[in-house]
Length: 91
Image (cartoon, rainbow, N blue to C red):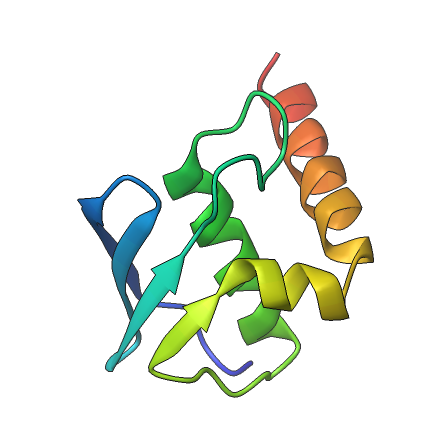
């Protein structure tokens, strides 16, 4: 990834988000039960897209996070660790 990530997120309905990543619009689906304990869906979506952007992963116009996590199961632990580290920095 080059430069800062410009990301905005809008909740369409529970579990469905329109996310603008730089200039690209991505519809993101988060099935019930997927995520990191104690983290709301919007924060989870932002974290996943940030990791994917850092890995220079091309984003489709529709992204089902269940499929992403199925292909990259370590992603949940990475996001959990990142959020834990962020919280530790603010205490």
